[in-house]
Image 1 (tube, rainbow, N blue to C red):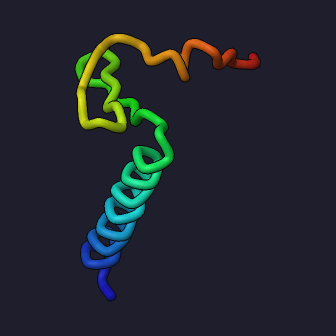
Image 2: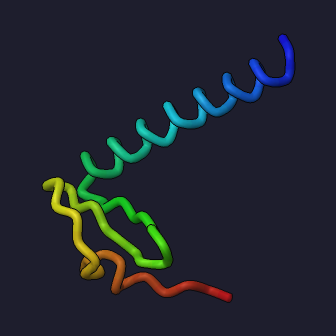
Length: 64
C-alpha cells in the first residue's frame, strides 16, 4: 500500500473511532468538548451546543 493510501486509511479509521467515542460519551451523559479559534464549546447530551461550562466539568481539577 503506498504512503498516501495508508495515510488516508489511518485518518479514516481515526475519524470513525472519534465519532464512536463522541456518541458513546453523549449516551453516558458526558458532554463533548470542542475548540474553534480558541473558544471552547460543549455539546451536551441533548444536542445543545454552548460555551457555558457544564457542571460535570466544573468538578474536575487538573493535576500538574
